[in-house]
Image (cartoon, rainbow, N blue to C red; front, side, top):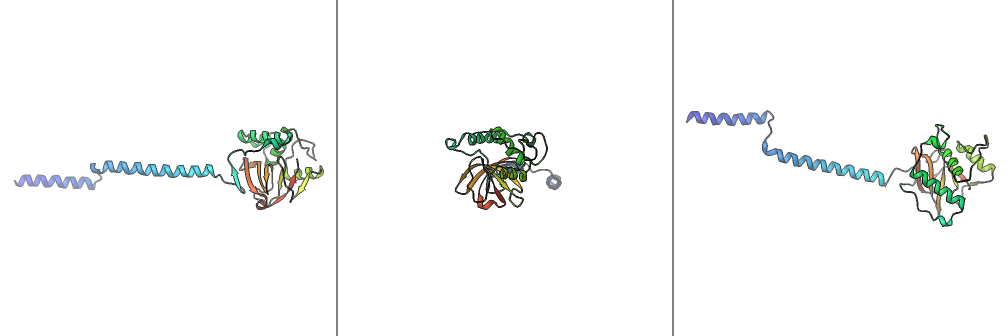
Length: 217
């Protein structure tokens, strides 16, 4: 009897020692698996929400940034305006690198994009310094519109195809982009080199700041 008690006591001590030395309790295995699955699902859910928020509300330079090309009533546009809308929509859906719009030159390309779109739409610009269709600088672009009598100061109500010109104090910095829509002081624009790509923004003109004026189509 004494030997049996000693043996039983030894088994109990061995089990306790095993637990202390990290041997898993078989009863905790299923529960641990369930906890890990729940944690994984929660993490996946949080990441999914963050992804959706990032893609449904992308960062904007000013106002709201569009993820889709805006609906535009093209029946109200003249032929040049309609071509500008068609060209910009094509480039928004299938954009090229900045060098595509800058004749292969690596540089800030917002004015290059405006120049390229106008040429593609059959309304090419003319660089006052070189005569080229490409005007790579915002200030030179302003000079071009002023020299052709098509520069309009703040207070002008822009139309589809007009060009917005900004100085360095604007949210965009020194920049230029093209007006797609204009309604009651709020514009929708498309521009190159916005976040390093072709982007669409909708914003009240009064909230933009740094607007120098407009290049009329």
